[in-house]
View 1 (spheres, one colour):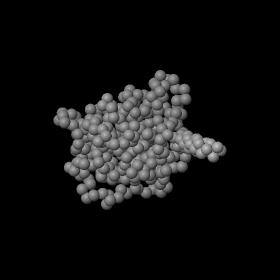
View 2 (tube, rainbow, N blue to C red):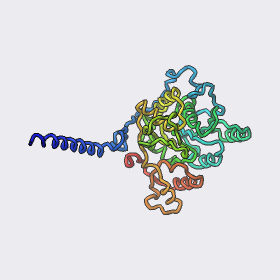
View 3 (tube, rainbow, N blue to C red):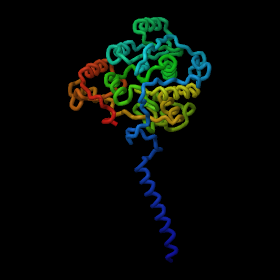
View 4 (cartoon, rainbow, N blue to C red):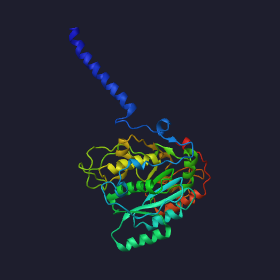
Length: 352
């Protein structure tokens, strides 16, 4: 009798133990596959800061002979407008822009993109089909000398061409830059604080293994036809994307940029550039993300500044970026706000 009771009771206890262990494990690692730990969580830097004044040299010998005229699956690529990087900038900023966004480019030139030592800013765009519009772009470039235009159509699903072309420009035409920032023309960069951040919190001599962004984890693939981000099963089979960085604010060290460029040139084309480059390819090459989410303003922060309800957002407010998709009016608003700031130069240590 006791033996008959023993086995059912043992089975019940064993199953209960397995359930408890599963719940305990879920409480530690979460319900989804674990993701790379960044300094946001353990305060151990993934990247390495250079301590001596040396320039990273892109290993061009590792690239195929015809690499310059190739852009992923385009074998006859060339730059239609090109402005060389003649200085030795600490920071190269690659601003993705739509050809029609003249006012947005103007707002950047008049605010955070104003000329300063150690900074090079170029606007990245593709070709247009309208000859009058192309002529206007050429006139704008003649005045400002800050365009990089590649021979592919500037279209919504050609964003990855833009991203990889921006890498190509950095490698071949501005190899002196210590850091490379890829951003969009609707983003505000707090450039005074950014330059302090690079020279004080990071290193004026550059870094290695650096990819600073606002990572997204366990992002599901959109399948509905109502979504502009819809991706078919033929394009991407998995249910979730690997951890990746939204492309509106990506700060690269040159070695990471080169590695991702090299992989992208061999990769099958996928039109969501940030998913491909900072997600799929970064995962393949074991490149990790360092989160700086706490140094990005929210829309609520911007509204507070706009209405003078500053609260904690006073003259000592420290941030690197405004939120993406910022209006032109708020671009000027944040620039006025930044000009009145008196920030401490210590940024990352208190905001990890």
